[in-house]
Image 1 (tube, helix red, strand yellow):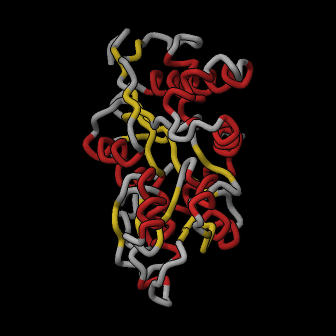
Image 2: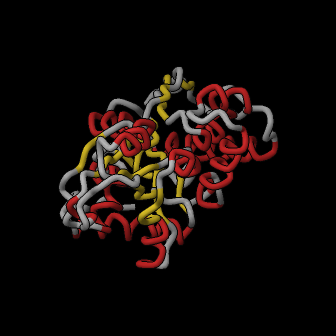
Length: 278
């Protein structure tokens, strides 16, 4: 990688990501020896697909997707969505449906999302899965188009407004099962970039989070412009839940949780056992 190369970057429009990256993409913190290309804000499953194609230098992606691309991408310590009490929810409506959850038609927000991985670990017999954009799942449940769905992002805070109910908090299920925080999404960088540049990118993302913490109102217009849910309280709750100590640095416990998720996913045959695990 040459000096001043335009580094391509992608992340989701969700408030935790726009909070994390606002300082970096708006020049509040430096990225030594490199320039950022205009960032691409896309749904996480689009980013997962792009990671499999190796499209971006630096990308947000699901930890599930990370298990498929560790030959090309390295996990960064900053910027992750990982924690306790923040996992996807399996929800349903009041209509008629099969008695067994494993017989339900269930909407998932993408085949490579961690939400889909957790559902498969929780209910290995589930096979009737329908992929929908994360922001269309609640409507599909409410209309009876599907029996249930796994919701993520702001939907975690708003599903009850549509008369839906939670069948299982998959994050709490993971915590009960493993005693570990749940790894949801992460930031990864191409291994083809020089190690010094990878380290600089990791440091810059960490600095961007610290900048946002110190200037919580500066990026509000940027965050709100991209948010699915406009209620300020929902946006703040979202940031408070998904931007935490593990976002600032995964630490030993965070890395342990990531490795356990990858181990269980590989044991379930959902991606290969790898030698490149973090």
